[in-house]
Image 1 (cartoon, rainbow, N blue to C red):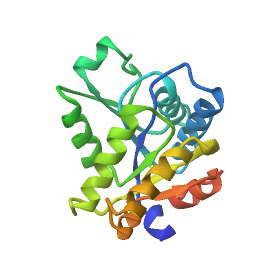
Image 2 (image 1 turned 90 degrees about the vertical axis):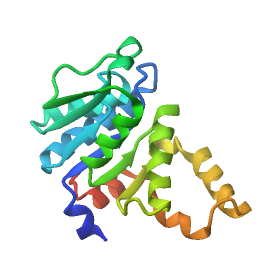
Image 3 (image 1 turned 30 degrees about the horizontal axis):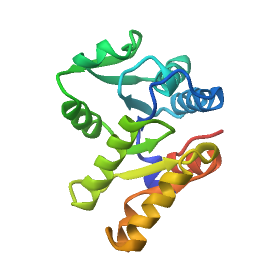
Image 4 (image 1 turned 45 degrees about the vertical axis):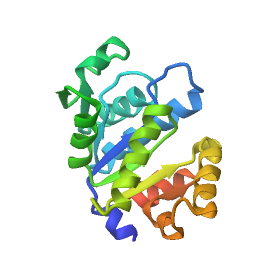
Length: 187
């Protein structure tokens, strides 16, 4: 399985865009970006310049890597778009944003985030469930951030609202080492 991840060159990162979050999460995202660039991996993400989104993009750029942002024009009223990316794709809707991020990615990594992060994650998991794709979805449970979500997802399966086999549509990792091994990165 590790070999399959090593072949994946374009990593889509779903994560939060809020600045008022613990620095430990932003630093993790920045370091991930730097290490992605060192490994020759391209970032595809939501195009923001704040929170973990900005941190991961700035890390990739700091490491001299490629960062592609996909930013809805209407979001400019709420968030700041990143002005220094390798490529910025402006779109008219969140649906178009997610489709372009999906089309340009080999694997999805879910870092700590809010409702938008959950929306993106659940959409690609659902797309995998209904056989639109077979790309890997990795949930990085950094510092236990997603503990409650993982409990909820387990409950959905345990109660019968999703099949036991649905666990195959995503992988939860709890350490940087696990994440890096799956993505073919070096710490």
